[in-house]
Image 1 (cartoon, rainbow, N blue to C red):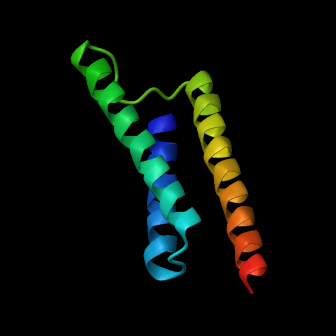
Image 2: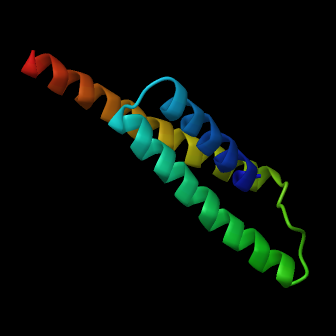
Length: 91
């Protein structure tokens, strides 16, 4: 489930970056979620090669996905705050 959640977050931040805001905070968060999605993709393929299911749709994996999303959004929030604060200091 964390695989699907990180892919969804990466797609959302990619759309936001290319259509709404060319912000460095959005770009960095987009890359973080794509990196996490790539990492979980490798893990899912490895699990499938060992005979397990391709996606782990368990409660624990859902909680892990929520933690990953929360951490990514927290980093995004801090970066956005610092970006705005720096822009106000310059102006």
